[in-house]
Amino acid sequence: MTSTPLDVSDFIENIQFNFGGIFAPERDIFISRAPARLDVMGGIADYSGSLVLEMPLEEATLVGMQKRRDRRILVRSLHALGDDIPNLAEFHLDSFYQGRELISLFRLGQVLKSKVSLRWAAYVIGLFAVLLKEKRVESFEYGANIGISTRIPLGAGISSSAALEVATLRALDKTFEIGLDPLEIPRLCQIAENRVVGAPCGIMDQMTSAFGRKDHLLALRCQPSEVISNIAIPHRIDFVGINSNVRHSVGGTQYRDTRAATFMGRKVLFRKMAEKGLDLPQNNYLCNIHAKLWQDELRKLVPARIKGQEFVELYEAHEDFTEIRLEKSYPLKKRTDHPIMENFRTTEFMQLLESPSLDQDTLVKAGSLMYDSHTSYSKNAGLGSKETDLIVQYAQELGPDNGIYGAKITGGGSGGTVVLMTSNENEQIKNILSRYKDATGLVPDLFMGSSEGAVHTPIQKIQFG
Image 1: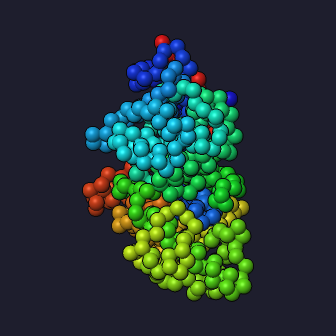
Image 2: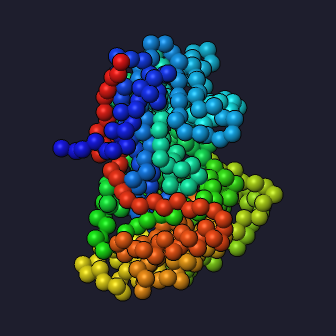
Image 3: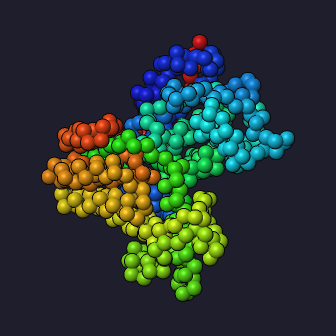
């Protein structure tokens, strides 16, 4: 029998005190839990079809939901959301409609973003609209009371947004007896983040939060979301995260420009391959191009740089929802290189991790791939930061002799968290934390430990009062 996670027990114990103002007594409240994730390998290559290796963390978001008897949605967060931002949001179900027609998800996003009191709740409110748009429900007769508690720091690059979306949708499914197939949950959550919130994320975050297993790496091929396996983390190593406390955002300009340039490079490459009579990669995913073929023959077909205006004149569009800025010069070759080579590195890393004899040499080779990935994040993807570089530098200086085998920036980069592959109970992590604080004045967070994904954590039903 699965035991109730400690954070869920604490949420239940304090629910009346924390949320008595919005939850009504003697009516069912459904409580769901979804963890953050640590991106071990693969990262932003997910939207190009890469293999990724993701670990669900102990840090998680909890959502309690209760059906109302009117058409309002009330959302309350226990945690501070920023200066002058109220932690209570209110929305009316009728606002999803103009006349009798559902407004677009994009328009809903504009409405939510226009009000400070609603902006933060777009991840939650947007899921109601997605269920309507995707025809998973015909209508919502009643609204809901929603209470949120989280241990996931915002902007740390460990997918606080995905955890909130997955936990909310699981609770919503149960509260309104929708009957979603668990496999639908990550896709619906991604739609909300892409089209309502407007963040151009791939699907690996939602998949890991939903389907990850404790003390395992979820091996996922993002074409669009094929689970390869859950790989047990070998007993002699740990994966830990150090948050640089430099805030990362998938919705930021750097991430958007990198993604846009990658799809621009894909468009150029595929047209030139077609002109030469070369077969396009399977299902048109960049990451289905073999690394050797790319390096030996195809890389030269992609220009080093191109201005947005010139690209639009020659190719019209790049088949992605990110904006092409006409005045910007995009480094196409480098941006195209990163996902193809990252898929190769991740595949080799997984093979090393699954080696029958995981000896010291094998771990050093695996760690070297992590360092190569980190370098490519900066040089090719353009998503590095000096603070995360510093953490990786400290890890490299300590090295395998001190039980630290590899390190790399994670997820969308540009700050956020560095993942380290270390031996168990590695005392040298404290050395890195101390040196980083002394050098930058920033206080790093340490993420250690793993937990079950949302679909492996039973939803609790309670009442109070």
